[in-house]
Length: 96
Image (cartoon, rainbow, N blue to C red):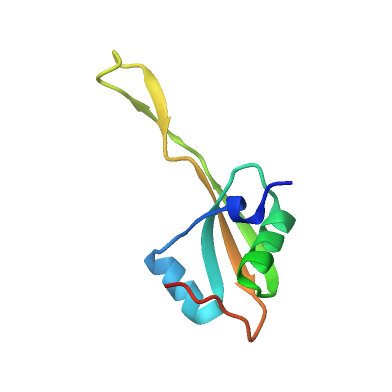
């Protein structure tokens, strides 16, 4: 099993994530690609000492781009896995 601090890569700060945090108590994190919902929930609960009620996962596929420097060889850019974590009532995460 992966260490909880290594599962969570970063907190995603976007307009949509801020609105979800304010209205639905939902926080968005970028996570490692080979984890599942239960491992993400356990990592959040252990790291921030809160109770998780729901985890939604979004896999963003990488885009294929061509490089001019490498003789037009294709490469990929931007693939990631996001987790939208809904906390139980009365719990919240203080993010600075």
